[in-house]
Amino acid sequence: MHMSRAIPGALALCLSVSVLAAQQPTEIPLWPSGAPGSEGKTGPESVTTSQSGELSVSSVHNPSLTPYLPAAGKGTGTAILVIPGGGHRMLAITHEGYNVAEWLRDRGIAAFVLKHRLAREAESTYKIDVESFADTQRAIRLIRSRAQEWNIDGSRLGALGFSAGGELVNMAAARPDEGNASAEDPVNRASSRLNFQALIYPGRSGDIQPTKETPPVFLAAAYNDRQDISEGLAEAYLRFKRAGASAELHIYSTGGHGFGLRASNQRPVGAWMLRFEEWLKESGFLK
Image (cartoon, rainbow, N blue to C red):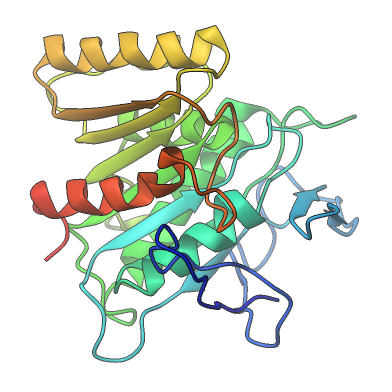
């Protein structure tokens, strides 16, 4: 359960910080009757708390969305699916999920934090390109299917992923479909196509193989991250350039892996979301 509070200081930049409170938005199951591939898996989610109060979630068998909707009259119409990282073993859901969603919501952007099934935790039967990807696509469809209810412009729906979450965003951007107009389930009638994407220190950057039709991308990482991530992201940017697909790249000198969004991060990398907001405006996705 979380709420926002103001952080003093020149670099606070109105960052939202997640703390225990009574106003945590209600999670929405992606499949109210149970997720395909999770039949018989009824164990509860596991939630651990770090010394700094950040939450990590694992054992997800009932994937869900947590919506962070702007106040009435404050929305821009833009919506973003937020996918935390965690190596497909857990979800770093505070600094790569809730904090990010609160920040976006406070700027009029509807944000939705995804809890997806994890393929690499102990004894998992799930696969990244099966259940985890299905959860990602279903989340995009669910948001778009309720666009009118949530005051969202379906042509300005993007996704932002961290580390392993970036892998899923890239996969969704590369493998869209337009939905099944005759599907009984109204969610399945909606398109899973992304209009833009943000990959923040994504894993498996070699899998990022854009074409001219790939949605515009915002890329960010730290110079002192692992070589395969910092150099891999720079190489991915060049592939976007050569393909003629729109891209913006930020490599910060410090930050390491997993900087996410924390009010305590006063380094230049701590302001990466301001650069992301500027990119959204410049690209025409934030009106």
